[in-house]
Length: 152
Image (cartoon, rainbow, N blue to C red):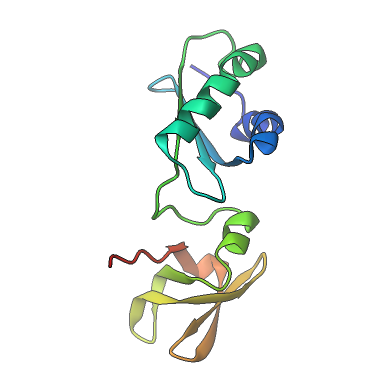
């Protein structure tokens, strides 16, 4: 089974999502399981009602787009989860000034896992404040960066 590109599907769905106050975070096409999953986010977070509302809003339009070239598929709409990695500039913008966790490919000062406040970013680097020190890291040195998860 083959799907249209994730970028093409995402761009199509943005037109429906934007007026609803929904952001398309990612689109995953899984030919093996014939599944198309759309990950969404809102400023208030995502709950089951939000997923259902968006799923209902895109069912007919996405069938008209024919993302699977006429083959049957399952459409899922989901929250990306608390620990999802940052992928887009919007992910970094949304989390600027907030605590983040970084997993590095190679140790920095003996550590492969860092936690600090995201203070700056661009296409090539990320700066985090750790214990009052700003540390600038090349993005290609970061295996994963996501929001720090705190349990109270």
